[in-house]
Length: 149
Image 1 (spheres, rainbow, N blue to C red):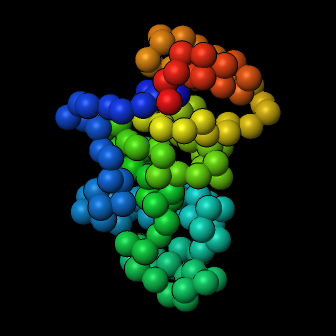
Image 2: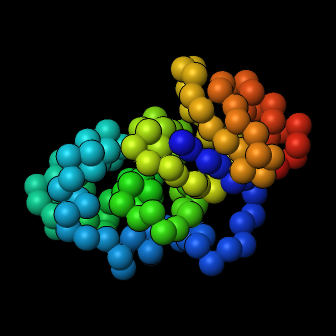
């Protein structure tokens, strides 16, 4: 299940700067994992050639550290269950991937904006309110009515 904390978060498990954290903690196996390969292709339009080489249509051959902040944050969410990550580093194009990761495991993230999770129904708990929502309308109303952001 996906759990979202909205607003400022002050806990030792929270990682604000996902880009720097990823660059210093990722494992090569994360990059070549089938889901990661698909995320990198979908979000960055890039092709994984190996654990340390990505073929970007814009930049050519790049090291893993040059992946977008969104892809890095998604991989952290998938592979690191010890922390809460700042999903504000992700754009709306990452929303479906966040939901997919949350289907595989319990996932808690922090958001500072209203990410668009699409028109399909989902199950998201708003941690601040201890409330489960199932549509974007319910999510938006709960967050805005309670001034969480």
